[in-house]
Image (cartoon, rainbow, N blue to C red; front, side, top):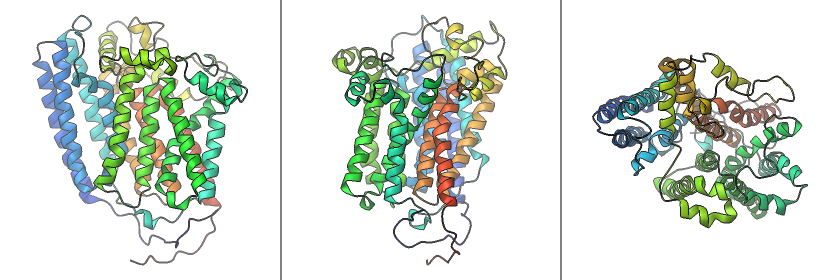
Length: 478
């Protein structure tokens, strides 16, 4: 394996426990729990459904700003943590849209049921915040202390390999006509020739390889962060790949995919910088946030008409809308177990077997015995209820709290991958995990396939590390 230019240095001790950061994290959790209680009381005193949601959204939003502001006292790098990311994502999926005026929801949901859904959602937030204390925080080494990094040539090889394999199912569908592929990307959602067959097969297996596309933004972010190591044409190729991937994500109309591209690119770019200042964070974060907000607003309308008719979609975008997930959560709360029995272990089983290709398991279940759409009377549509609604179907509030504790703990454990990184590839592996973490908040049922790109990158990392010559460690000069 080629080693990055510059002296090789070795850590002489284990990563120190970040005790100050852990104290700030604990204080942040206390503040959040207090804010969640206030949000619940504020919602229960509301006179209408919309007022209940908006009051909870405002109080919880302010609480998140204060709580995470406390943790930022430890430094700007402390913001790049998965536990913080998943809480922000879940807030965006459940409450963010109620910071803006919405149409009257009282005809769909009364205030009492709205408050019940709010309380269950707040319990989920609390579980995430408490679960993240399952693991200690480590200060980690700075980038100057990293012992392993892929050379520019290997980084470019990894980028081009993931690009070719990831887009292979698209190229095969259009007979490697790139112009035709770009044209079809501008068509309305689900009208492209590479849209996956519902029952799967060899083509579906190739589509699974398309998950490697999710590795492209963090790889490009790492390359641009270390741009001085790369030649101009390598950087040009990286920018071209990023542009294509962002266009592909935007034209596909699935907002969480496009937002994940932005998040993993930004995280990788900033994590690979030797120093991060508030000015750099603003210079990178503000434009990405503006693009993310605009995309979340317009994509829901543009996707039905296609990018080629974007003017029509923009004209329809008169109200900020996410997915009204909390309405679906409320519907599931009212339906289980009053109308339907809890599904129990069927929910995690279906979630875990989802990555298995049907070509290898012809009898794989297609989905839950009863879907969210069937329960809510919206067959033919695709509804989302976040992981909260999905695990409620398994066993009610107990399952919601348990799942939240597990997800919070898993996020905290994954943070250690970032804090103990030993090279640029480790940082990219860590950044790629934001994809699965964010998707898990949107849908626990769909998270298992999202883990596969990170697993593939981990396997590549381990293969590279085994090829490294074993040199005796030498002390680091302080």
